[in-house]
Image 1 (spheres, rainbow, N blue to C red):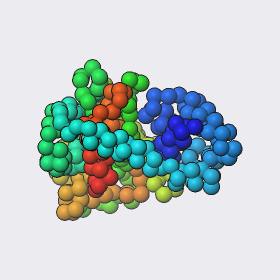
Image 2: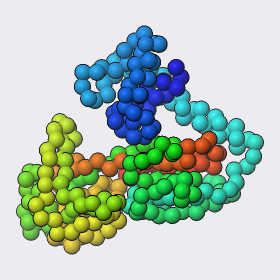
Image 3: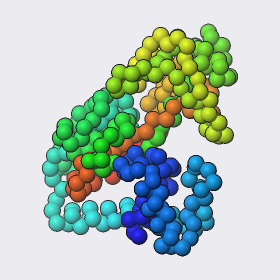
Image 4: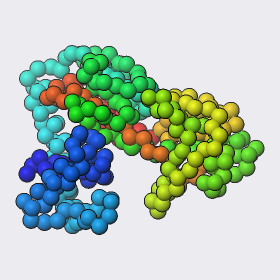
Length: 298
């Protein structure tokens, strides 16, 4: 029962059966059966199944509130026991995504090294798909959906791609108040890790949840990552999509402004992967460090 309770907690935090299936490498039907088995054991309904969203019954809310911190407590206790046996010491091979790391992780690496003076890091900043086991990484952060069951996976955060431009762009091209105006003035398409082009988007109203499919008629530029997205926008000649933490400095100084802030134009999920062996004490403290970075990100 306890394993199914932890699965239920992860389902609530992830927000959907489909995302949890990706993270755990299990079929949605398997997850659904385990949740149903938990309900049968507890003799209560935990979920309202009238929609595709995860809606909790009162019993589900109570169960979540009682158990939501149990896995964290267990992991912290295990780490404490391990650290009492021996001082944390060793080398971690870590793969980090260039774009997300820039403002969210890299500025805090020094603090981690200061806190753990006997842990050394070998960091590879990656823009390509990562095979954790084959490439010999202890931990990897990636925006690529996991494709193998041989990894332990944690969903760190899901970012909403939104529209940004310079004030000069809006002055020269006029305000953008509708999706149609945004589509007509968009010129950037995207490349997937396997080289496929993406010209369309699914705009989601963040308040109502209404979805609108759109197509950029004539992309002038295709890019495969967002590391230079602020520089592309700074010309004042194009709209760009990103999320706030990537361009935090430009937003805070007014060099870029958000367009149609009520809309998300695509979701980008960020995952933490490690080989699905027992989590070492070194891996655990770095994973907790990564979680803290994302929790405190802008």
